[in-house]
Length: 117
Image (tube, rainbow, N blue to C red):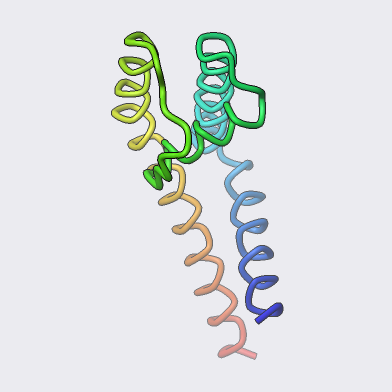
């Protein structure tokens, strides 16, 4: 089990390293970072949550997990959360899709190299 998790982490790292070499991916990575950072800051200021709770809520919302343990309390926060979900899910899915594509391409290249050896 530990080996399986480690293998996933290694593949994820390789995919990120490969992606950082491409300007489009760097832009997407920057967009994800700005989106998460801005939403975290927003919840910290408007809801008065701590940094960890604000980051936690942002990530839980963007990944559509939605545990329900934290909830926006003001109308402004609720409207912001709606906009975050509508914009953020698309951005995050594009980011994850790109990482998955890089990981799949790297796996195919390694498989082809093993076959040719």
